[in-house]
Image (cartoon, rainbow, N blue to C red; front, side, top):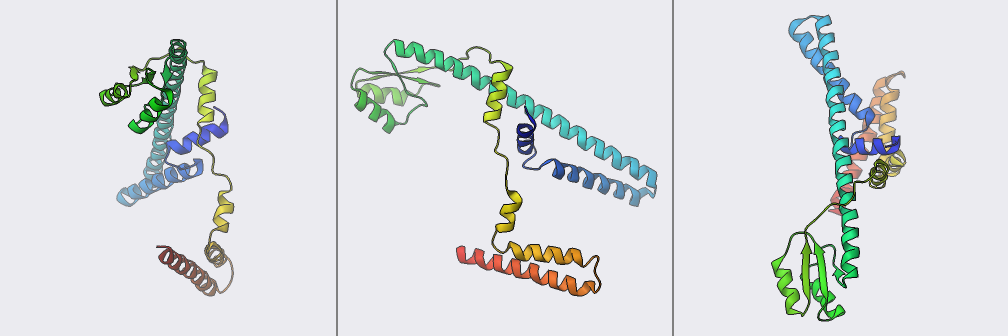
Length: 231
């Protein structure tokens, strides 16, 4: 898989967290573990080693989790391609024999409409587990319904599996920052955040912090009122 597809699947594998978020999580919990050990034993070198060990352990677990997820993706894609190949071959045989394929398995209304459209004596075919109620309903309408158990066709090539995974890859979230900026009342949050950052380097920091906090409070209040009106 190329880089864009890999990142999209990795984001899905780790519940929507990107590479930066994953590294921040690992660094945070590693530092937290090191600080806890430092408070307990007062040995800075031991706390540093323990933090590095937690960081390495987090990287190992993340790598292993992605490898297992990727193997499952390839296995599922290959199985789906084998089923599709088998279904295509079976469908060609059924059509040559004069049958009509209904896939996926129809409900009663769809089946009734197909029987009325095709007329009595039509041989319908489905893939999957037999449904006795549908079979009896079809016979009442003067047709027949045959269920074929799932099979598997030829083994797909690695390129076919890669193409399948690329086509099914989650779409990347484009324009995320643009969307966040254009959200209602986001200007209050942005202004508040900028003012709080400026308070760290400018004189009279208290006034900047008060203005930043006021912007955040206004943004939160407007968002709350908007939610109540839409409720």
